[in-house]
Length: 340
Image 1 (cartoon, rainbow, N blue to C red):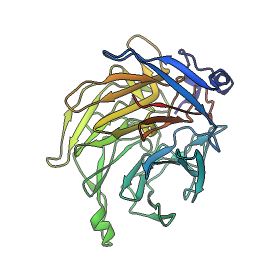
Image 2 (image 1 turned 60 degrees about the horizontal axis):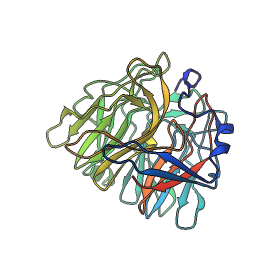
Image 3 (image 1 turned 120 degrees about the horizontal axis):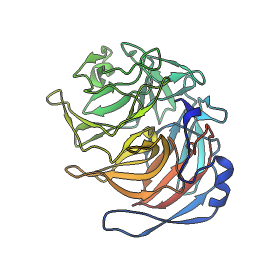
């Protein structure tokens, strides 16, 4: 990310500006047919500030991996948040300091691939790893065919899909789509195979699987030269190896990989970067949701605009942690509200 170019036009002004958010925040939420007020409760800070972490939820706990810490430094730290008692537990560090990678949960194993390694700006990598949650252990897997950063990772059936992202120059968007058969890997013989390419190459898009189909949501063109947010959504059907167009976002959007997830049959996406028609790039505060066959709706508003926070719904409550309010600030703030 080209952090120096961002502006906060909607209320965020760096970590110092968050002090006024202590306690409970009453915010208006604009939704179709819903004028409820959403109350955010300020929770104790995370153990370490995070921006662009990888996230998964298992056993009612939120796992955070890597990302940037203060000074835009890549991190190896992995933590688990348990909302039942508010505790944080540090688990095994990542094999190296990585950002710009998605996390995918397969049973009780977390997968991640590619990314930027070793500090800002970092270089693209081809590494693929799995993390056994119960054993607290990382295992190397077959490398991607080429290095990539900011691509999408998704699990459909027993196959892992990596798509898009930027090439080694950190700026050229790739259409490549590779698939790894996890059953074949478990038997000791597997490699990434090509599949139907992403129709429009881009990077830093959100990527999830819903009803057996993979959604590539938003994203941006280029990375280091410029960052052009996109509203496009592409949907991949593994049964036919084909892509179709999904419902577009209300505006161009990127940088919400760790805050996009599936819950109760809907896709949620919180915060990120956005570029509305005729406007410049901003940090976003909207919480969007999509149900199959429907259109994207604004279902809530974060306590402040945030780039690349961690987010999840656990036991009917919406948690958001970390992220950047803009201008390369990285924060450890954490909030919770009733799920929209």
